[in-house]
Image (cartoon, rainbow, N blue to C red; front, top):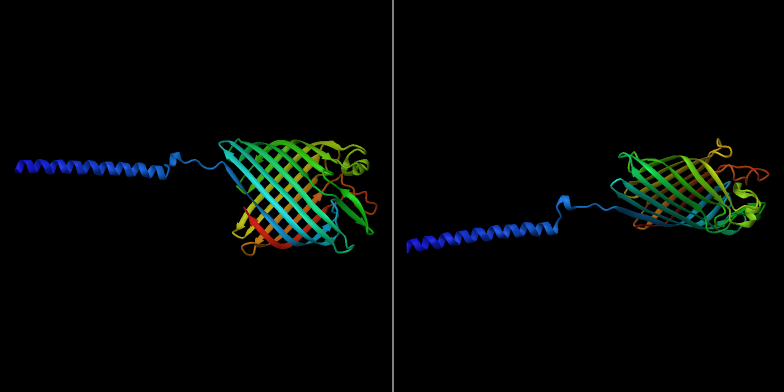
Length: 308
């Protein structure tokens, strides 16, 4: 009986040990199914987001070709979206900004729309961790008519794709930090488009009178910066420089935009936006309205801000 009892105890012990090993193996397999091993984990290739703001603003304009008065009250909305792709050595950055405002002129009692859209797409192939061989396409224009005011007389100054700027460029894109991109191209094609017949007949924005577009070849640089300074403060800036090899290359065209958002509460924010434009072919200023000038637009507002 002692021998039988000893054998039974040994069998039970072996069975218990086998079951324990089986349970541990099952637990390990179960753990793997819930949480991937590091080697099996793949990062997301796309990063998307944006903001939408709706503000009551005080606008200040100086030599603004798209039209407007020096000081005005406005209801202004801004939609800013981005979609960035990254995989291996390939990257693809896309941004879209759309600004739409309803302006009440303080000096002439008029009302008008104020808008601008800007679509930028850039592909890059990594040469090093911070330097890409890149190609860029940019379209910038507006949707609605714009007017200038001279002695309370309203004159058409801009329209949809009048002007429109279509730019195609190839060059190098340097990204020293994740918030900053510096794109430089020695060879860029830029089409200045003036679809509006009345404006094209005047030769507005540098086109030959009666022509709807003008091709420019030149050097181009674009600096983009987007930073979340803190949980409640974001800043976005862009500087474009273009030199036309065919005519007055020393007169560099400039486009700069700055947007600072300060979140005051869950949905309430304060916004300050400043745009600077200089184009040697936009000759709408001076005593005789025949000279170029630095265009300045400033908007200070408070309203709703939604991040997505």
